[in-house]
Length: 177
Image (tube, rainbow, N blue to C red; front, side, top):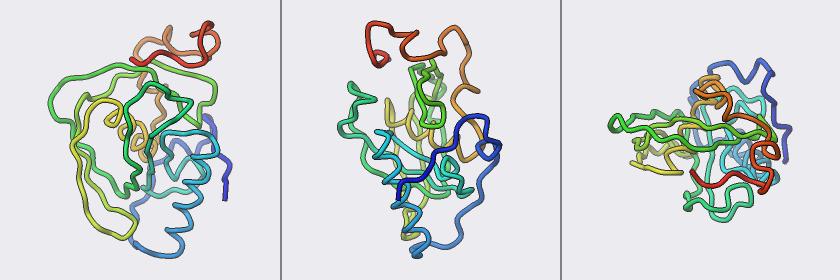
């Protein structure tokens, strides 16, 4: 079922989400299906449960072909529950980000260039990955939602934050960073 995505300003987006304690349940599978349906309906690269009003530490993400992000490398479809992100090194990269909870806007956001993320899948199986590039950006962005952080809170230069059509009058989307 496609759910309403909360928008920046809704206080539920500013809260820390709770750990998931039960895995492989009908309720968790239903939540994940709703998240997939909602993300797909909006051409999202990822979605966090708090964005649809569910205060649990659950994110999904994945990109193969996406009109909102036409020039990025593929990111595997992933369910990540109770994540832990560890930066690998001090290198940071800045790039354009958008968000389903901040529609029509883009911002230039610093992120760790390379990270390890660990967590559980929907069955409660632990896994970890070491990633960089757009994959690292997506997982950091989505996991920020679990701590009540929206990408505009990370922007250093607000002159690089605005409506897509004003920032990029010649294009629908910003160029790949």
